[in-house]
Image 1 (cartoon, rainbow, N blue to C red):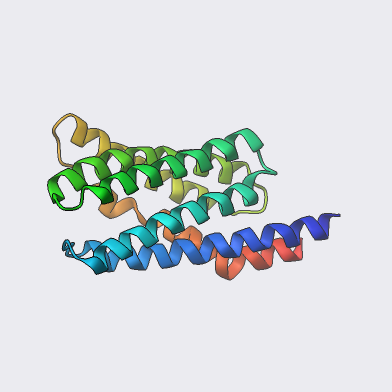
Image 2 (tube, rainbow, N blue to C red; image 1 turned 135 degrees about the horizontal axis):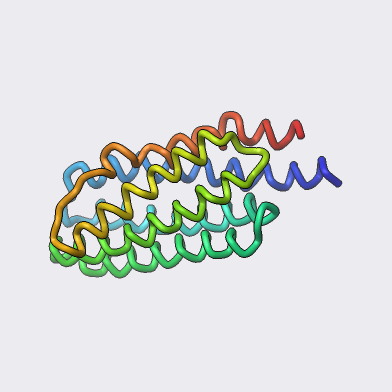
Length: 181
């Protein structure tokens, strides 16, 4: 049963990893100089869909670690995707878009916080990945909360890479690690 369970876990690892990587590249290209046009709307909508796919993939991967935390982690990411969609509807006014999206990024930060805790508990994922994701979570939460009270911090510029590294690990090493166990 262990080998079959690991085979089942390797697919969500691969799917989540690929989607995190794709989402990251779309985000970098789109948000480097966001313009209100059809291409930007399609790109952001694609990111939202990928966020939902990642939520389900990470849930399936981490459900055996702690079902309740995995459910909370996935739920927070789906809520974030909903807020991002609401922001997208407001994209005609970039100030409104960013105002809404920035609030959503706080939820995303809490999603990463729960994800980091799950990664710490998972025996099949290196601890350094958990710590990088936890560091990323703090960047999103601090930046978002700072905007709530009127401060513009840019900590995320230095901490965002935790989820990207996790994505690459899931694709390159994680899937193989799960298959070998």
